[in-house]
Length: 336
Image (cartoon, rainbow, N blue to C red; front, side, top):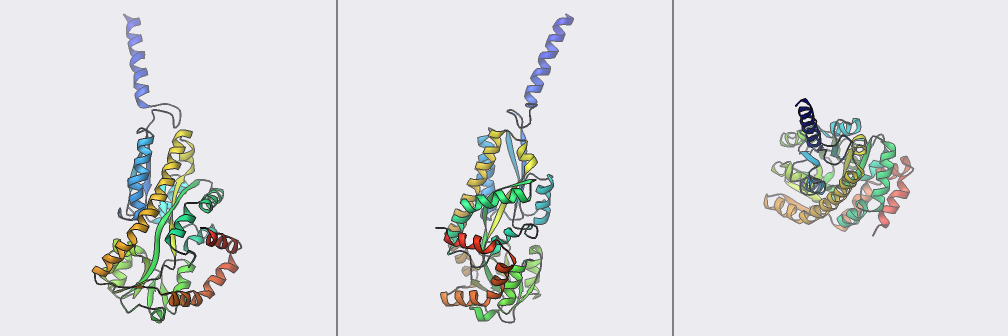
């Protein structure tokens, strides 16, 4: 009888261990959760691709062994918080811009002005060979992370509560700009003044007249309801910025090779899908803003060249300050 009990106990224990998953890290049968965080609402093309591609691809390809828990809208912190979380291993995956550009100056390429012929050119760059090269360099610079995908942030435009239909209209206006030298230099070179204000405080700053305008993509103008306090949009597309899908290296390395490949494949598909959806929705975004009463003006070729000429002090300084810049920008412009 005692032998029978012992055998039954051993059998139950073995079954329990099997149900709990493999003891080997990343092994078959072990369920792992990948938390993904960003600062965008679910309607942003990159956020939507995380939901519709990254999450689904990983969970389906891993047969549920990997679960993806998505947190949009800055619910886990601002961009700097998310970057620190992935870098320190307290967060598995983050979608961020370039809060690390002071440590790794090549990330300034994401905000380089007038670098692309059009959105399709930007898509070709950031889903191709150059993206792969910079991702490898990123890991060398930040060994505790992997950069798995370059998605679209937006093609940045300028909006204002004051007339803004040509390059000459910038003179004397006050613009909220992101806190990096490229954006601040842009505003100043165009004859405007720049003020750094967090995105979460931007609507109120525009509503109360602290600043006249700002620069963001139309998708952000809509998602942040900025069209409610702005009357003019100049579609300059002066910067086509990227968002980076970054994963914690210790977490990634702990996965099986099969699961690592699943995550990498899903990240690539996510980037490709986000670019395609973003490009497809630009015309819809423009039409929506016009329906809301915003005067939308496309930048003429003459004004585009005038804008490039006026920001020459900025671009000249960028080239002088960054030894990698001339070669990398030339290679990007040559991408077909």
